[in-house]
Length: 271
Image 1: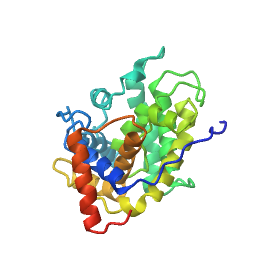
Image 2: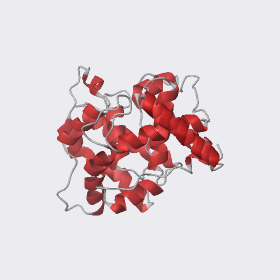
Image 3: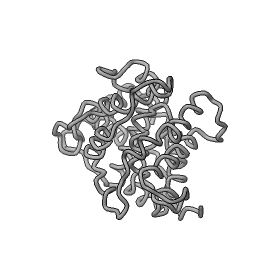
Image 4: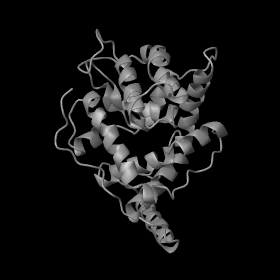
């Protein structure tokens, strides 16, 4: 598999940085594009409904007719601005990935829920689920890290479909800024570990964040996401994107972020 290049670790963020990331996350939860201030097609809560609802049903019963759909995948691609995935000689095989979902990512998730698959770290389950499934988005002749993968797409879907699994939002942009290898299927082996370490490093402040209450999401899914640190991972992801200047927040959100950080300071929330 090779080793990672000299990498850049996740920093310990200041209250101002995490406060800005959280107000951005709140906008996404409510269906607002934090970069433009405009209403989005779907909210983060909607995406959890679209992907976690069928996944939870499938993990509980093989007889359910619920499933993730190509339409929902394409919606996520549009909202998450993942269209660059299609700049490839290999066509993305949505139906092949949907067919393989149960025997790849969902199988790992089910074993994780049953605590019957013994992997050393929480994030290893997310890595295995992503790698096994991302390969199925392309018609490969063999299973290999050298094969064609759709890691950013698979990872983003799993972030919303399995919110209690330790999935981090992999992106080529972040991987490049962190000086990881150029092949996503290799970079993610290190990316998930570094993000998990960053989660622990920033835990003293992240633990004070509260995930927004659900309005359309089923309560059991919300509870699983909340207990699985989904909101903390969402905020951490945005903090990294902002830190590396891969995205920017509107001036209004920057003001809201400073106000939130000031409220944290008044409550003596420790960074």
